[in-house]
Length: 242
Image (cartoon, rainbow, N blue to C red; front, side, top):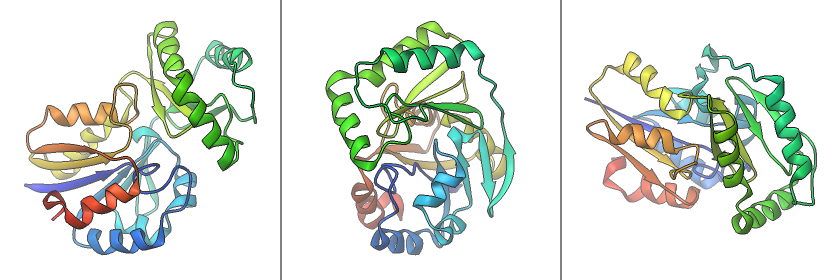
């Protein structure tokens, strides 16, 4: 039975949208040297490379980007799955930005990625401080939870999940992170032991679908963390990571 480790990136291996801590990166590289490791993230490869350097990426067996809608191995694209949102959806999201009571809007609110849309009211042009301010405001006002509820009801053929500090991911039903399991079974066989670590393992979080799918599989587990320090502690001290 092969043991496979899956990691989210933003909030799990790094601080949100920040470069990986160098000391942790050294620990991760040493730990991963004799293991099967995949990254599973909502970001595209360009954003991942801003946070995680090539040596660490190359130490992984593969990298699933855009919720698993693209897959890279040895820095080469293996597959991608498209998604063509309707114009009405884009107009709907633009109207939501206009109607939002959050006062700061920095632009680049709708980012089209392979197989998904990333949507943010404050906008992806936000600085680190603006991201943190929006996140604190959202914790009190639950705007992203409202977006999830709204899109789910208005667009029943789509799914939506909270990702990162400022955004939600919108995608076709079934195209969440759980879709990576099909590829892993094809690559490694069905007799697998999988350990997944992520920071958004809760209803509406973009790690939730994968975590729930793993609960239905024998010898598979998921672990929720609040940041890379907890991931580091798991790698250094937990028997699951031996």
